[in-house]
Length: 215
Image (cartoon, rainbow, N blue to C red; front, side, top):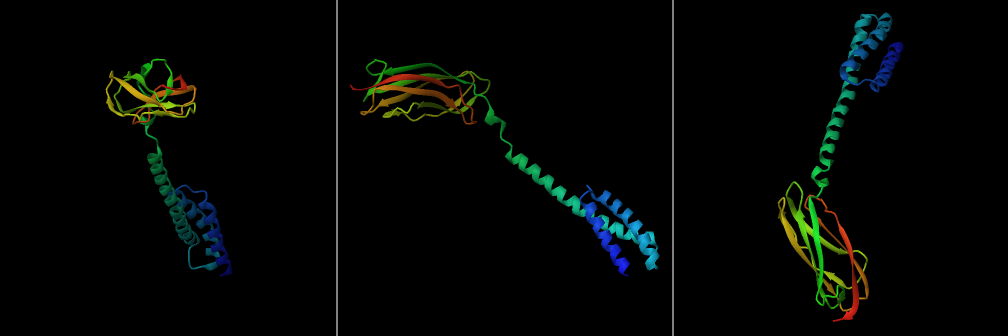
């Protein structure tokens, strides 16, 4: 009986080893039955009452089925999770769509026509936005920003354009206000557009002198 117990322990050990190698339940059942047939013949010689190969096949089949269930089920769950994460996390292709918008005819107009932003002076920055692409543009936002860090300048908030069909052209005006404490120097502006799909047009950068002189 002790030898039979030892053989059962050997079967369990071999089952554990094969679990790490089998890739599906059919292969695991076949391998388990083969191992059990060999070991069963030895047990049959010692125990009697059972045919050795039948006893071994019974043990091997049960062990092989257990291996198949242990290996196959986690693989199915892993594949389902990987597919779900891939679909959910894949970025939308439209986010990387190139912009067909172009900015042209940029003009600066100040009140005293000295081509300088003076303290307490209201100026206009005018430019055209043209949809030169192949598709319509939605929720177009013209952006005018000062990028040099010049203080005491106010720029009017952007007015969004909800829809621009192909070939459409819009003239846009931004107001730039020089405050009372504006210093003499040079302001650098950047102008571009953004769309609801994340596309950005080419940007234009230019400088305009500033003066602390009051009107």
